[in-house]
Length: 90
Length: 368
Image (tube, rainbow over all chains, first blue to last red; front, side):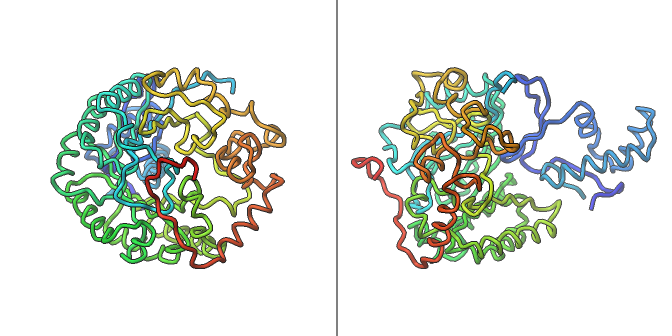
């Protein structure tokens, strides 16, 4: 289970790529693709080396958002990405 | 469709029909393309150039056995330079440490390794290849040692359906992140051998229950993709995510298709590279437009709530089972042929040990 103490990383064979023709960002993995909006992309890029809890605190401060809401949203996003195989977590 | 037509997301290159295996379920056409008619390295590179320029994001190197092409590393390197995500779909029997190192160096992103089961005798009966399991296990070790992303593809027939739990355990023990449980689809050689291959409904129910339990248990560690033989379903699959909506396939001789089985639709005139560019085929070819979207649909498909979910199912299956590519996919419960198809599947599944007709190169007799 993902928790605030977890750290996440892109799964092997997964990468974040700009889709220039369709003007969007996507996660590319083995025989799968996930369109990521600007916020999801920012969260992914900021997640490097941080626990989810620390990431959420930084995001809540930067966007002046309630920490509990940020934590709920980020955990939901990462859980969904993990279950689809795009993320691994420790 | 009211939206402007988007370019395909992925391209599947059937580099060659040559293969050391002779799988009875192979979805390659019965009339296999001889080596002399395969496109050149320069042609395949030009196809990759066009694919990237058009906005395709992923390239699948397939076949036949793509490793039978000596220029595979060159093609992978070319795809990498173009920013394409590259996937090698292989039997693994030609893979070794040295060959894999060259492909990794070329920028390969992912390997999909197929297994016909885990016991040599069963796998040999299905594939006509001796000692394949040991070679595949060695290939798996190479891919993992190179730290390359890997999917195990277990091809399921009624011969090995009862081993599914053992296959998934094997994947789990090896820390595999993604597994495909791929029931054989009945196209090409697979259609010829359907009576010998199709699992029973009881086997299918047991597999579905097992997959659901495994998915729950390995959530977040191992993703299991599950493809069923849809003859027992009530509604058809969204074949290829809709005809000519997401995927472009290139045959060994450059024929451009919306799916790898589409050449069975002999009333359509499919374009061929290099006479046609990929963009011309996709955006202008009448063959690609023939079953795209919903305008072609007969009743009751055109009034169906699922029409933009299953896109009317599979046109090749409609032709193969109902004798008409433009009618309902008989897997759909609304098809007048549906009950007949289910009855046939049930009957064939009870036939027991039917001899398999292994794949062979036979160019003289087309559609034999």
